[in-house]
Image (cartoon, rainbow, N blue to C red; front, side, top):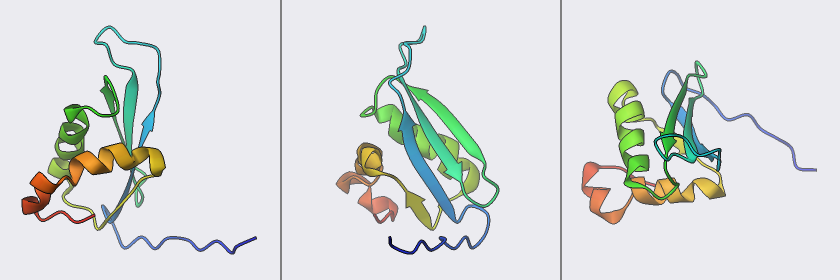
Length: 101
């Protein structure tokens, strides 16, 4: 079994994790998924209901609920399912924003 090593946390806002929960029961506003964003230092959680995983709302939620309140993190972690989110946030047309993935 490989040895596990903890990931260093250099301070508030250093590392965030993004993942989707769902599909969940359909809401009145036609949302099926929740974007879960977790800050690793204080374990702060931001949740945003979304209609699907591949919506422009994912990008808006990331920038509105995370970047505008906490600033740019040094690291963003996703699992393989989170690739939809990362692909939208770090798309080629947004490369001029100075984001690297």
